[in-house]
Length: 293
Image (cartoon, rainbow, N blue to C red):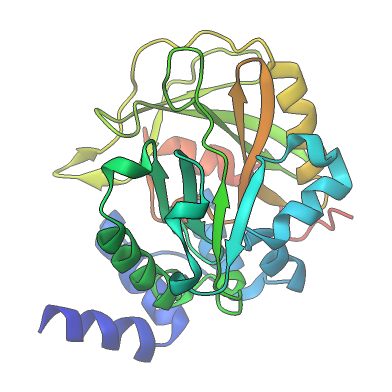
C-alpha cells in the first residue's frame, strides 16, 4: 500500500501541490511560492518557473562532460572508461579492477567498485536495472531530469594518497559567485557536513536533511584549507556564470582538481538550515529576476 500511495503521489498530484505538500511535511509550515523569500522557497519556485533546455544538458552526467570541457578543458574531467545504453552490455571482464559506475539521469545513484573480484555481478546489475528504470523527475519535480536519456557511465575511481575516496568540495554559487563551500566528511561512514566561506572560515550553521528533530549531517571535524582552493574557486565561477544558482561539485585528488557534477536545486529545496535565519540570508543572494547573461 505504501508503494502504491507513493507512486500515485509522485505521478498524479500536480507539481505545485506536490511541492507544497512535501515542503510542509519537512519544514512543518507552508511554502510561500507566490513571493518566495528563503533559498528553499526560491529553489521550489525555480522548479516550477525556472527551467531552460540548458538545464537538461548540464544535469545529464554524460552530456555535461562536453559542456564542461568547452569551458575549462578536458583535463578536469574524470577519465571515462566506457558508456553503455543497457545493463546487459556491461561486461565486468572488460573493465579494470576498480571503477565507478553511475547512471546519466540519476541523482546520487553511484556504485563505487574498489575490487570487481569482490562483488556479485548479478547484484550489481540488479541495482543498475532498477536505477535505469527510474526517472528522478517524478520524485523531485525537477524538469531537467525528465528527458535525460538513461545510460550507464563508467569512470576511473579516484583514490587519494591514503587509499580513500577523495573529499569533494561543493561550491554554492549565486549569479556566478561562490558564497559557501560545502564539505561532506566521511560520507560512507559517520557522515558530517561543514560549510566554509571563500576565505575558509567555518560558517555557523548546518544545512541538512532532518531526522528526529535534528540535522542528519551535523558539523564535523575541522577540515584544513585545501591547497587548490583558489583554482577550484576559479573553476566554480567559470561554470556558474551562466546560471543564477548552481552547486558546483569538484574533487581535489593528489593535487589535481576534477569536475564532479552540477546541481541546480540543492537537496531538492527540502533541506533545512539551522539556525533557520540562514535560509533567508542565502535567499537574499538569489535574485529570481536578474538576467545572469
